Image (cartoon, rainbow over the protein chains, first blue to last red):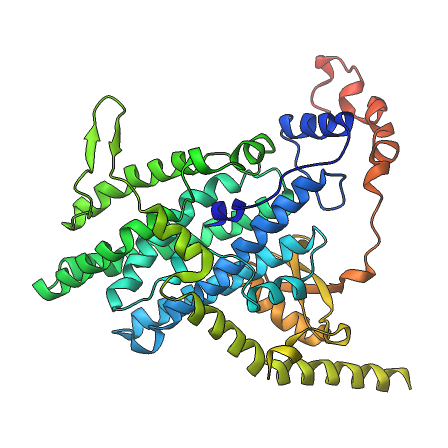
Length: 325
Length: 103
């Protein structure tokens, strides 16, 4: 998710050695950095990028799930899906608010999302073709997000860490509602079970890609770990996720679509097959199945909301003028 | 609307508001984040939608972000370190015999 936020981030700094050493000492001492504190430009830039991309991911993440709100199979499912999508919107707003403390404006971030230059998690560029996908997204996509986000609650930047604490509390509901949907299908008719399996087959690899490129290709990880923006590398988190998820799939009687998946007794961890990184880079660079649709949907919402924003501002200006008389 | 007109002009900027929430009566309002809104009425509404979806509070304050004056972080040491040396401001500075009982 936001670990992908580090793709192409430039962590270089131009400050002198003494300044950087003093900053690093604060980080090593586990002191939180707050908005107006002096910080290396590279630290600020890395965070703006990561938090911004994380916020965009939450907002774009509303689209694949929103697709199924009107077609949820029961009122109970509809109410919880609606609440979940509303949460994603809320998460986006907490994160935009955290990013703004670093001096970037909301308008600037919105503009980058709408003109297609901002990145967001690659997973949301895949379509939701069946109701089972809503379950799979909650179980696996939110599960992977939680795996990424728990360590971010201890991120060295205060506003980001505080936003992540709120988000993690809420994500837990998301993962459980997803798993419950998949479980219901897996324990249902053979057709329903097949639906759950087919959805898992499509999402498994893209979900593993959410943790970002392998450590061997991720040149920005070292600096981010040193600054305690990141606490674990992409590969470490991916492994943790696989280890946590395999038993959950076994409980459901579903098969993880990976012939190379085996328990490694020595490592006390699962070995898994290669990931198609060519596909990952294709999607990140804008050529996934849904990239164009996602940005088009955001633009449409923005454009169609223009009159509301204008009216609200005009009303506020009029009230202010009246009060001044 | 064409792509050309989407560019945001300054008068479109939605003001920023800081949000404070009282979790329950008996506790003070604390800062939880910020929202953009055209005026204070919309700001309270937006703060309610964004920050209180799970019973997080019973009261909301919104304050224009521009209206907050903060101490200078570069002066943190001058401002706050002097109190660290005044240990006589703390009860543990004073030796009272145990025989006196709890005080």
